[in-house]
Length: 387
Image (tube, rainbow, N blue to C red; front, side):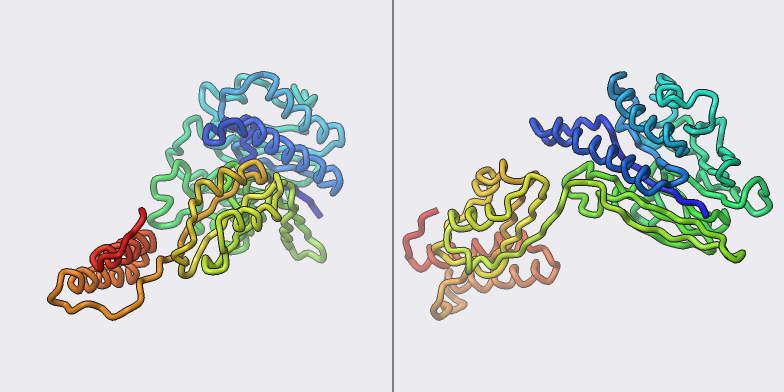
């Protein structure tokens, strides 16, 4: 039996320019998730930790940040847990690579041993005899791969070890979506590799699959790198077993990130007032929560709502709060004017346009047209309207 902990896309040192004064806090959350990952590896007594790329957010990191990460890896070294790291697309193994600038195995106290391995363009795999495993992970000296890192890989006949595990930072090919990605692999290549397990990084959401006999998975980022990544926050504990001569792979998700996500839909007709909405949302206040609120239904005329003000008022109560107004304006009651009048022609024209954009599932435009229809009908009918 071989037990692995698979992580990727830690993105230590990410700048988070979009978060303003919260950027430093988010960097600390990401580092805390890395610490939690190491804690889990120690608690579970895994044999091997795999980091499938983008341990660092860029190749430009201060020495103290690299030493801080190395100190956590040293905890694994001290416990005799082996670590294999694949460069990613953010910490690519080019001339300016962070792995060239700093000797991470030495900083982690693993000089002269196989306890910490950083794969590079000259070393496509590492054999770890103590664990009876070969870790395969071709990478390149450029961000954009000249070919698939799985091209030509077939471990059948490789008798160096019982287990053959892949470690790559790459996008699984999806037609029309990943064609322009920097490193792309295909399920046919995964199947042809005959690996026992393929540990992937690059996608920040956890996902799993199987191609032929090869189980593969994206661990996802251990802490969301962006605050809309609601399938991040996990690492994977993988058990490879060859009991009774039959190989099996078990993949378990484990939560290490602090960030939580919650989506709420609220009927605008039940809100009452803007202060009432703020008070209701404040009841869920949590500094680790990303709250996404969507207002739906028919909005009463008397409801004066400004979502930017709601978000600003709640900003310090959550990690992030987003309020989207998808409610629709009510139409005035009463008979529709004759089609040969300006008002009648206006109503019928806009109603047709509303139906057209709703059929195209363009809700934002439909809502704008509904507002225009409501206000235009009131104005043309001679009502006084405050904008």
